[in-house]
Length: 125
Image (tube, rainbow, N blue to C red; front, side, top):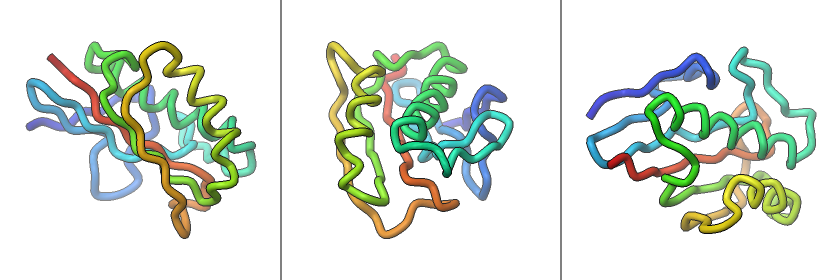
């Protein structure tokens, strides 16, 4: 296993890596709606926060020569499941034809007061 890091996604804000990779699998850490410069979009809509989370996932994948088409599974943490429809509308823009498996759950809180956090597992063959 090795760690993955790119300046095109926000730096890890704790004792973790942006992603880890083996020859076959890349697993991202949960991505918050943080810009690569570290600006938190917690005052933005759930749709805008979703877009930023997924752009972060895409940047990490791209750093390893992968794309959103390589994603096998995502896990989505929402602080309010009533935001699911707005989240799903933006999410669908990133995974339109053959979307990966997905779990979406409501949690008590998302780190840093964000409305959403998204992690992904991708095939890295």
